[in-house]
Length: 271
Image (cartoon, rainbow, N blue to C red; front, side, top):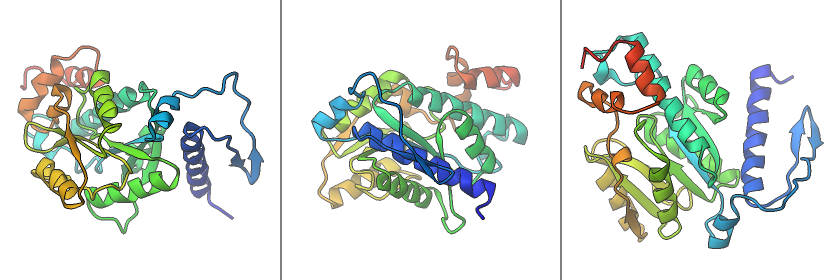
């Protein structure tokens, strides 16, 4: 007999497959307790992904990687306690997931992590949790595992967005997705030489090279495979919140969950 946790994961796996297949215009069934349940007929056959299908790019999935909370944002230790860092990471993740949820061109949003609290949090916000296997080591291996799963479930394109870019705006995401129609690899540089966002078509077009100087590493990986690269520079994606000196930019925003969390911690005086 399947355990409750395993059954829940399989249900979520089915729902992700259905979501991505529906974005391709297919009529799908979902297995519930071993029975196939047909979805209700929609009032209209049009889908928010019709434009993507016409352009040939297919459904796009968003993927957000998150470290274990105990390990995340260690550079903020001078101003945030362990509990505060945990709360702040979840607040940034909430901002990013809500941003992606507001994008009709994204068929599904997934969060890959080895942290059960992160996965449960993502599930509550409507994202698909992807549990990082114990055999997977490191951010890039976790992304490769999740990208393969999303491609297997029907995603034709992938947008990788870190959880630490709470300054990102809908216009930033729209600019990336629009450019992804024209190039199989879209890179958004960060101020530190990293990658603020990465769009791929197909989802495994290049290996992931996140880490120091990842912008150049991702670009080199695309060139080695003969793939055109488009660069989209966006201020909201150029700053990943990683150090105490980055926090004033978050405090200057309006209405973000990240800002609310910092203010509740009385971080204003600390930075």
